[in-house]
Amino acid sequence: MRNLSFSKSDSNLSIRRKAILEDMERYGELLEEYTRTSKDEPDNPDIWTDIGQVLFLLERYDEALEACDRAIQIHPENAVAWNAKGITLHSLERYSEALEACERSIQINSEYSDAWNSKGNALNCLERHEEALESCNRALLIDPEYSDAWNNKGNALNCLERYDEALEAFDKAILLDEMSAGKET
Image (tube, rainbow, N blue to C red):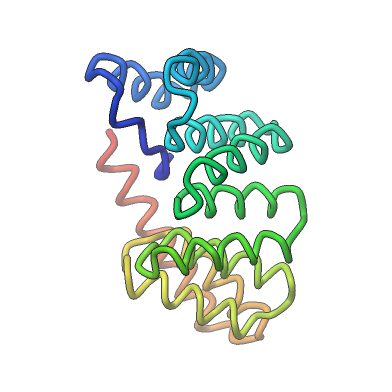
């Protein structure tokens, strides 16, 4: 999970434990760890963002949205929390609201490739494919090896009936995913 930010105030041991739980996809236990940490640091927006992302992985979207909103309430300029909110709203099929959250994330940090990619994804769902393509291209300018952005670019190109370009984008996404999987083993 690319976006987990782990609280800077956690001890190194706690950070390593959370990383291991994440790698093992033991999200229930990971949520317990963050919940314990949130009791010690209830005003830490990074913890609430992380809780939101774990709840998202557990497909508990309404609770994930509440956690993201809590992070944003504590620190309104948290680009990661705004993007996490956008992704969660997207999963709830609230695409216009997802787009607004992603745009807010980009206002805060215009070099945040995840937010540009999430914006492209929301725009695709709103059938605004040219704009989606622009957002995906922006994400790829920031991070040319971002496989999800290549995939979303392929989706936009496919919807625009630019099939050869779509296949190239999908091939690039597959190649990057394979390369990433090779690094993990």
